[in-house]
Length: 109
Image (cartoon, rainbow, N blue to C red; front, side):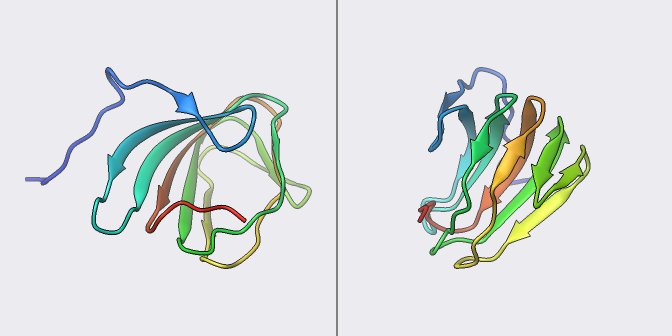
């Protein structure tokens, strides 16, 4: 038995930290500040290179085409960005949906 089960049913997309990005929060850990979210990138959205100084990021591409460092990634790709390590820019070639976990407070530099 799982202590927490979340579905997207009844949840709303919220504006993300960049234009063209929306988030749907599936779980928030009140102790660590970490979150698990669905992220939706509109086709053509570009997110500049950035760093998360307080959290590790795991992102799994569920749908769409994502370009990183000139290489296109398709559904089934898992990205890991350790806290404090710059990553990006990210470009959504099509609408992209990812399942993303941040294990600490989501801050962006």
